[in-house]
Image 1 (tube, rainbow, N blue to C red):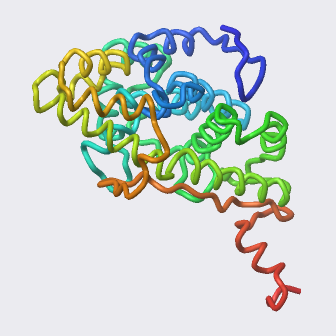
Image 2 (image 1 turned 180 degrees about the vertical axis):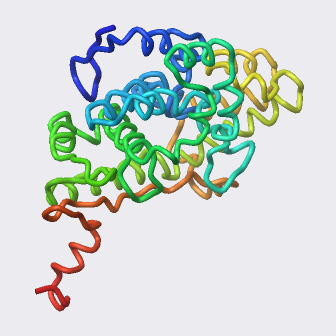
Image 3 (image 1 turned 90 degrees about the vertical axis):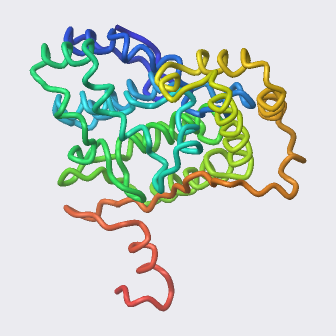
Length: 308
């Protein structure tokens, strides 16, 4: 399996067991789940899928020297994402907007995935909790393979991150004591600024709040009418969209039209019921054989600090 990845260039996966896992229908489903959720209906260039991102996280973990089990965890980390990704978090609210994590055992225990994992020497239970894999998953504002890949992948799709900047960021990553760190402070600052721009303009801004809340209204109405059920969200975007459009509901049609033909004036006076999750970086930067968070290093460099 060889392809040109938008982040990592020419890549290949050759291990038979990994290829079998990728070929499972439960994993292939992710080709139909847009990472940007309903925002992709308004901005078609936001064409990253959960399938593409999951492969990317696997590739980055492999590049960083993670062991095979953590690489498999990276491949499967988004297996339970519902149709339109985080749209479900505007219907089934949670503080961390991570409802899909609660569905992970259900998805990993599907017969096709469970059988493929057994042939690799693993059980589904080993991948229920991503937090046991420190290169794959760290809480904000640290670096992890998941966060780095979606940042660079979405950033390239939205034109915020230039290919040269993505290459520079990747070229200045290292692993120290199971932490991903930057090896250059200037590159760390550049990454923080680009990540902040993505958060402000594409992940958590007023436009995203409007689109996600309007889409949640459409989902609620579809469920009220009985044309859509929570189980439908375990399919893919096209299925859910077809169910909504087939409802013949004026309210649903109006909500979808407001998203597909988004107009900036729609934000005037708009107050979202649910606001998107904020994201930020304060990455560790290598200092000799150890590392410090960027905020600590920059505080120490400011005039009037106690740094030598």
